[in-house]
Image (cartoon, rainbow, N blue to C red; front, side, top):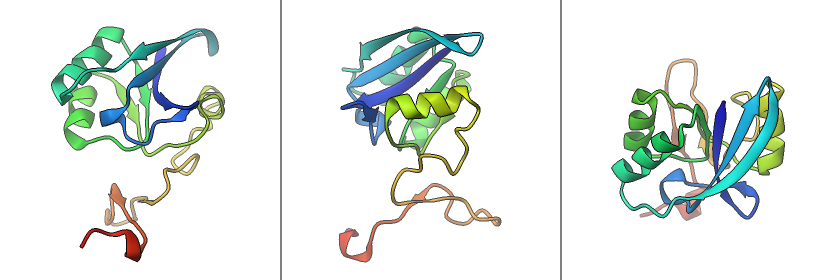
Length: 132
């Protein structure tokens, strides 16, 4: 299994769409066997998605991601775990332990989905930070 995490200074990059580095972690029988960093120098959603597919990721763990890229990756069979932030090693440990739940390592400002589907994927900023 190949897990991909866009990285910035040892942490999950806040936005996959503009991340420049991708950590690829190889897992066998629930254990890490190797890791390598790959450049994500590609502009444009389609080229970025094609590059990820060529790497052969099974899972992408990321912060924010645009709907077009999310859709293309999902259609290609990549399982995307979004709205995560934090130290890459802690997130990998949680993933391998089966503890990377919806509430674990939340991206600041993200409002999770309510029972009735409201606020799904909505990012809330403090009132003073919103665009006018």
